[in-house]
Amino acid sequence: WNTNTVDTYLVPAGKTLYVTRFSVTASAHNQTDGDANQIFRAYLINAAYPGGTCYVGGNGGVSVTLSPPLKVAAGDRVYLYCTNKANHNVDIEVSAQGYLL
Image (cartoon, rainbow, N blue to C red; front, side, top):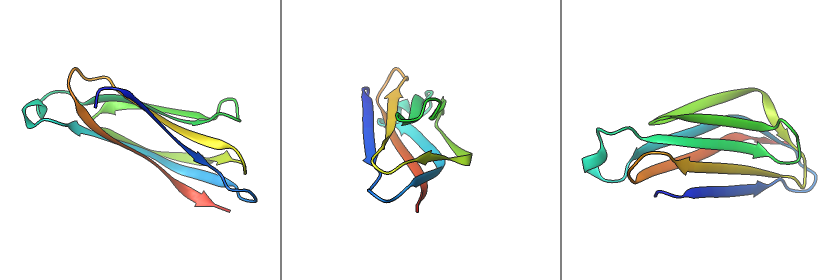
């Protein structure tokens, strides 16, 4: 895809989300673009907390450990935002890992 994508997660009532890792992989959608750069930009955002943003960018993929974890309170949303910056279609997978307490 060649568009911006946003996904959200709403933290359930009575829980706190601790995000410990933010990962992105990018690969060419078409085999003919496999030798080209697979450039992306991605954000993990806790909109309720100023400064609660993790930004990553790269070529092919990246994984970042968040220490201390990004804390997201009950009822707040965490957003995963990603955009393809390559000049061709790129398949991008974005994930955030962590735990609920």
